[in-house]
Length: 355
Ligand code: SF4
Image (cartoon, rainbow, N blue to C red; front, side, top):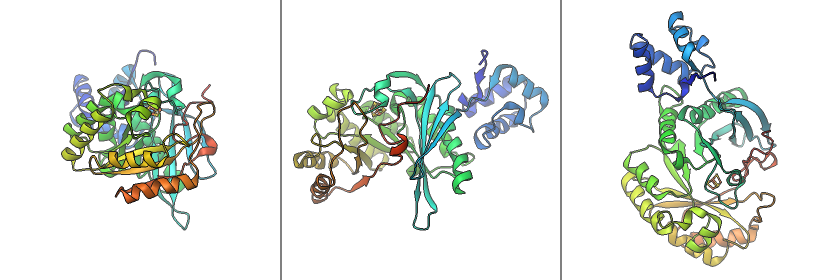
């Protein structure tokens, strides 16, 4: 943007340094922070209680770079997929998923945010993985997706978002610093004030970064995309597993460290692929993984992506699989896919109409 910098990329401390550098009183930094992250204004001109001279100083070098809505698709089940444009001109997708209770009130409003444009991890069942990697998002761009979804949720459902999951485009722990900063932004009582259990980082299993999340005291829940319960199968669909630094042994050590350090259990995400990872012996191997440390398993019914060669497990096989897990003492949930008719479900985000 004409050589200007994005204000939403700055931390509270960086905003303080900026304000001081421009010769403004200290409290102006707090005002600036609230205009950006609590009120989420679209421009510096809207920051009406900042002196005109300060706004002019800001405008000469900065802009407000929230992701901009380019397109909105609404599923028959209420799921909303947003196509958003970043200040770089590149595009991402964000999904708002309402869960309704019996009287039709939106009880839970979950936002699935993207952390990268594309993804370098190359999982063979995932449409995003096919795009390759092109850009990391900064913390303001990640937070901004939740901020925009919160506004849409208030307009449509009469209440703000309740949960954020880092399960959109990209591998969050490859963009560690910005993801951690965005978690802090989401949890600030002055902004969206979301608690630990309401923010979930999801990773393919970058073991050293999982340890770091624990050691840095990052206040979020953790989900691990497992998808296969042994090294041979996992390596065949998830290239990340081929390295000794991120195979199942490394993952086990990291998960044990994480659960001991944080006192929180982890969730294993397990996408069911017909005839690939849904046999009784796969279920028995998954029980072994689930017993590494306090955990639960979330089975996901896969949304076939044309041309990727995977199919969804049938109901009878799913039930048999669940019985083995339950008999093994594993806590299991099943996630039925949402927003399939608008390609908003897991693994389907691929900017098919991004232009
Ligand atoms: S599943 Fe996640 S980590 Fe794997 S390619 Fe897709 S976006 Fe990347």
